[in-house]
Image (cartoon, rainbow, N blue to C red):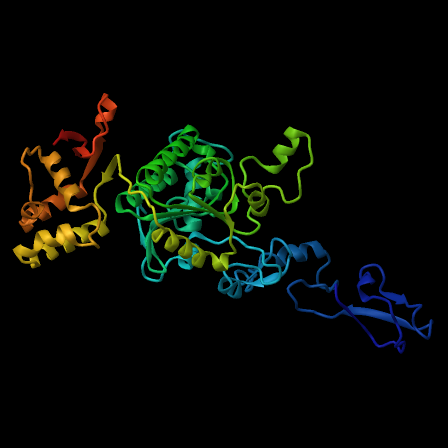
Length: 467
């Protein structure tokens, strides 16, 4: 309560005006004055402020504060400032974003949204998202403090996302990659059935297109509201990664940010060919307090941090956020030019329709074949060094198996010459699902077959028709 004193002649008065009680002490003797007999009266400094302190107008101060609270108060500083979680320094958000959400006082790495990470890692104008329309369901009719559908709606309104993952493709310093980024703001980045399905589709697409895969993890683990359905995503994602890494021999880089715990750490988070973490990131399975209560021991101060795990051999690199994009480029560039690489094969897979990028590749290849002379077609298909996989022989072998032809040669160009037939084929692929599996005679007791053969099946409108 701010009060003003009438001039009393005692200029050396040190008594705080806030100690004056208006209702009970109309006048006070101040011992700090030069003249002890001088009386100093207190009066309100502000008469018409948001909270009135004039006792003559309002008898009850509590009623005054309750009445003034009804007036709308606008906080113009909201969204402009934040506080560092480590050192407590007040940070201007505009400058913080320019600094990649790194505290410029202690270099602590604050949380970033998935959209900001994509903007930081992917070249401008090259991001193409996949499966944005997948939405979660409530298979268990789960209710805790509030119903699960209400939590989903709240998280969707907060983040503008259907679920806690952004998946897609883009260029990283000119190198095409498949990228999945988890969103911690969506129910703590928990992994539900939609997150698992989107990651699995992203991995399968990267495998079929021969892309390097990067997954940025930040999660509290499996989503408890979906029970066993969320736990099954761990096995599903790990199975897709096995084909990507061990069969197709493609690169997978796992980027762990703070926090990464629970089922994400126990599955794809630790399955990367190269595991990278940000400085100071909290990475673990169970919580620190649970482990201490179980072991009845005091854990080190840096337990479950990125530096601690790097020292114990669980991580390959700890890279500051400012250098992450450049470091990922160096890793993939080195991997691209590394010698003694083994060519991989995709033993089985499912193509859920075709993506726009695949359709565009087919149309460009069709135009390229149509524009070439008849003498140059075979030479281009067989001899071009930059011809995209699958090779011409693989196309012929697959098409022969698919059509059941027994001839020695099938001209794929002749099959695609008709533009109407091409359009029908693309339309069929959009609404259908193609499954294939590699035949291996060694599984039947024979020797290892040098010629890989595939069996295809077209699934259309939930009806399987063997081709």
